[in-house]
Image (cartoon, rainbow, N blue to C red):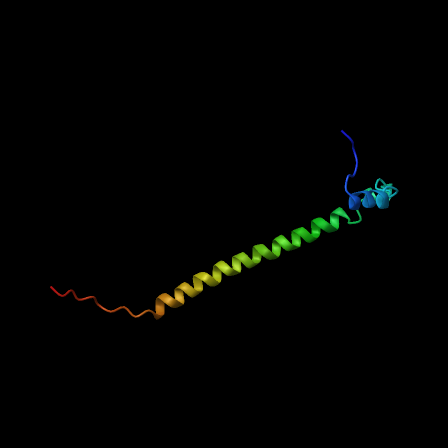
Length: 81
């Protein structure tokens, strides 16, 4: 069993990319470019904002339910027997 490209286009691609360097990692590429403290601060600020938004949404929902229930007009139901 032969290993390699069998079709013409595959052979051309192998020839084209045969000399490409793929393992070119250096020490600078493996170091994070974002400060961990800055990331934690941003995540905390985002979570705090979302938590405040949820609390406000819950409060607005209860206020809206109260307004709807106060404006509802109830009529007496009379049965037709």
